[in-house]
Image 1 (tube, rainbow, N blue to C red):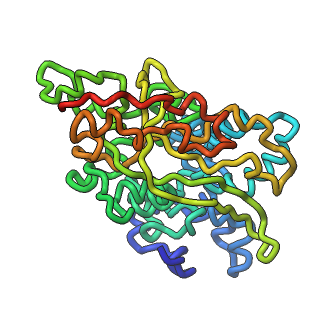
Image 2 (image 1 turned 180 degrees about the vertical axis):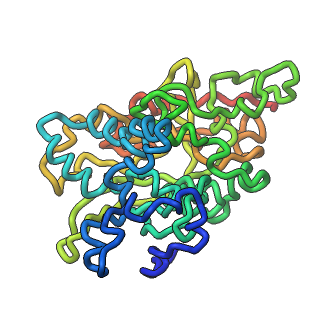
Length: 367
């Protein structure tokens, strides 16, 4: 999306004044002086984005949401630190916090950055003339941030690969599955990772699998051995080795990945639990390397091999019919689909021992 003009970012429509929020004075959220004699005095100590500073304005009326949002992943970004802490040591934490503040913290999203404006890290700008939007528009909020992988996959923007069947035929948007309760953390415990605890939504919430009326024998045969994506996902994006730094020319923080590519990979499940009992899951490469943060210090990830670089993934490009579910031997005996050692970089073999499939399932034959 092209950058917004200044007037597009600050427009307050006349309709806003007739809404419940519009009955509040501007100074209630933004500060400044309501009855000031001139512009300079009126804008003294004004806060352009009040919710980037505090959620006090929202909590006055929406306490049940603002209280739980303190533990939501969009607010805490705890998933990042789960990975960083596992690979680092306390001695490097100060340097890593500086790195995080420059390159990662901008992904934090406040209440207003979904319900009033686009998130700041994708340029900001009001959604609808300062109107409060109860259901944020998918392409201006959700996929504006989660676009390069999830958005492109779900909407069918990867060349030659159709969009997710739930979008393509059902026109389902993100909140059909990822409800407000999940976003606000009102229906979940504080989580340190998106795959921690019970899934907020499961395929079986809508699709009866393995029951008395089951007409697809493969569902009964495989049971909980495979995640649904193993049979129903198609090629998705992986990225190799990200590096971060501050530009000498502009002073801006930037990141750079070595390669981005499409592929489909089945690996072993390293997050096996009662909620995720699968033996095999789809995995994608995380853009991390031992020297990703070397701009901020030496050897900041001494425990790099403690976490895999090929990780459990749930691609958002589900199809009913896929290349691997055409027959038994479309998958069985097809080593191309599995994350075998020859597909893993030599320097990452140790980190991925628990993900690598040592021997793909043998062909069934005759099916």
